[in-house]
Image (cartoon, rainbow, N blue to C red; front, top):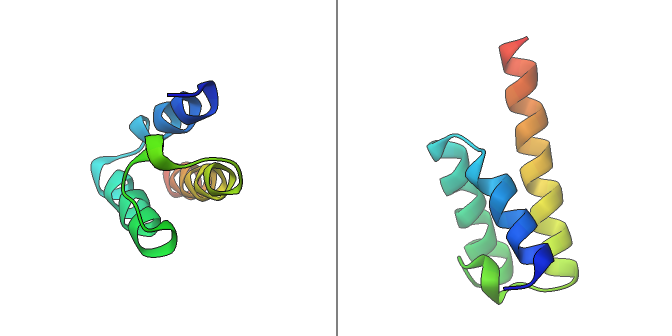
Length: 63
């Protein structure tokens, strides 16, 4: 696993279980895989931004 893949996976693990499952569903739907280790380059970028958006939304819900 590359450092970038580890970083994205670490971000995903910080999510609530339901949000984590949403990210996996997004990956399957948009990228054809549910595994971070199969992603690279632009795919990792897309998933990272998706996770960051979910994290921001969760923070706004708490405020």
